[in-house]
Length: 125
Image (tube, rainbow, N blue to C red):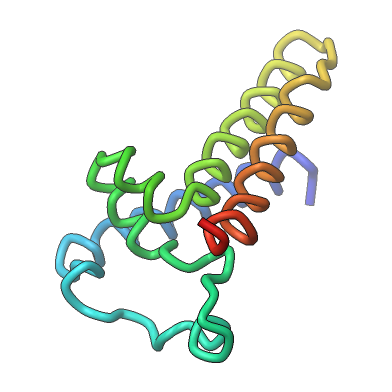
């Protein structure tokens, strides 16, 4: 399989998963019903894991409520922004033949900062 074909297939899979999530969340509100079992880490330690609030954050993001999504789990929003930067860089490199490293560095910095916040700081605040 050619590298371009793999990227296209990966894109189709990502879009399909998000479309399915959007349809599912049209019928189920995670703020009103519990979709997944409680977080085991939270149950054992009383601390939130980095993914706690991710389902509600995705629901809010798909509903267009970016601030509420960020409040539920900043890691989710940082991951989407970082993914957009990486895809944008790949498109830029493909179109121009020039390479730039700042989008990947910025993406890694965003995800790292969000991971530190969701994994450590929000449990201390």
